[in-house]
Amino acid sequence: MKTYKNGLAGFWMSWSVFVAGLLVMTFGIALMIKAEAGSAPWDVFHIGLYHQVGLSIGTWSIIVGFLIIATTALMEKTLPKVGAFLNMLLVGIFLDFYLWLPILKTPDHFVGQLIMLTIGIIVMGYGIGLYIAADKGAGPRDSLMLVLTKRTGWKVQHIRLAMEIIVLALGWLMKGPVSIGTLLFCVSIGPIVGYSLPQCKYLVARLMERGIRNEDFNKRKVRLDHYDGVGKKAR
Image 1 (cartoon, rainbow, N blue to C red):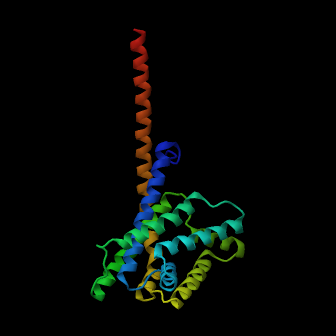
Image 2 (image 1 turned 180 degrees about the horizontal axis):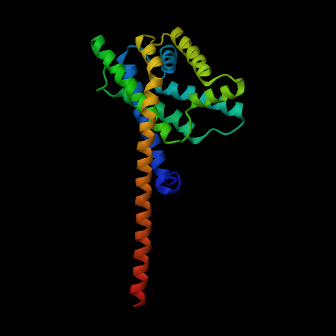
């Protein structure tokens, strides 16, 4: 199979998939928040900060993400990766946009809230699968998790669990929305991403290969047109 990361088509395609993944993932986050049946641990933390300090949920997502990126960069003594920076910035912007949409409303009944919450978790799982499949680097929180894993020698799942327990507790103390949705997210997001990621990788690989084939075809066509033009002038 061709190395689809090479070439201009592969470059733009991979970044387009990355941004699309963030758009999808953030829409899932917004659905979970609007369902008002509990949110993911980090969103509980962001919403808690919003309740206590003000600003917007998306703004707090950006601020917290920036602090995490800075901490990770200091620990690793390296500059932040572009993918992590864009993840931090775009998720916050997209989240505030989705939450602003008048059409996105909290259902009146608990069953509707639960359905909205479930759809949000599934959408979020596929968004995560897409942006991971684009292979543009981990997000701020995942980057910190990997650095802490390397520094402490603990297993990834233990570091992730510790991080989420801490932010969940802090968010709950700040009146963040901890409910059945929080538990449902914690037990289901791993299996959903495990199911969606292979599908997303296959989709991205097919898109990349098609993009490169089109790019190669256009290059060959330009060369042939140029050759014909030179031939005509010679005649």
